[in-house]
Image (tube, rainbow, N blue to C red; front, side):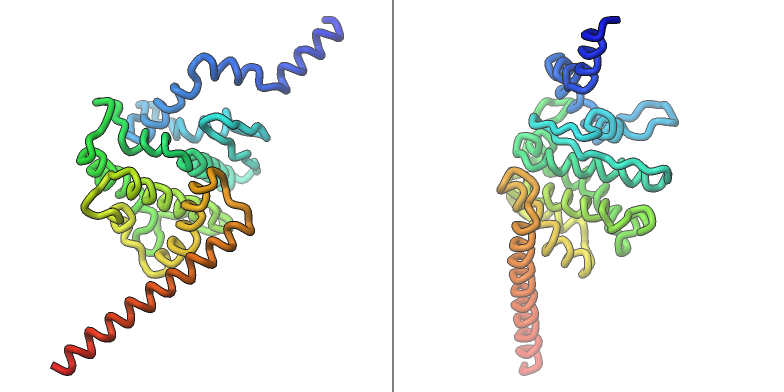
Length: 256
């Protein structure tokens, strides 16, 4: 083989040529179908099957490739420890989905699109969100967070933080896409967060999620610090007002 041929082959391997071809042949539409199958629980009968979503995130979007189309990669770091590899894969999946959910088009596909009927009505979307999506997420938060991995696997609670942000993103779109006219907070209410989880959600996950939607990207550390400070002050103010109202009600009952 000529030197030029070797050079051309190396260039092809280093470039995104194959990836560009795959995009033109419908890569994204296929991925969306697979994501929906995972979400709907339509899994193959193969007992060794883990997750199509995980395979996509850790194989198509790996290394240092940056994709500026409908999806963005999460760049996994591999280790020899099985637990950490699983943690890395889970982190990649949630991080990528969280980035995708910054876009209204993705949120609409998640809440309002049905593989069976094409489009969900408002009632169908609400039922799907509260009866299918919410219970799966709630399982993480039950009993103080029994659904989360232990700290030696989920180091620095990385996955847990991503799940909180994922929940905040879904709650935001539930409110803003008119999924529910009766109770805009029905989705987050369904999580039944305890006090510690609520504080973390309101002062970290929610400002990070909603700030990222506003900017269309992940917040810088300075932007997140400012957003968190504002959210914390607002949360403490609301809690203080709630305590005052509760105290006034108790006082009026005693007078009677």
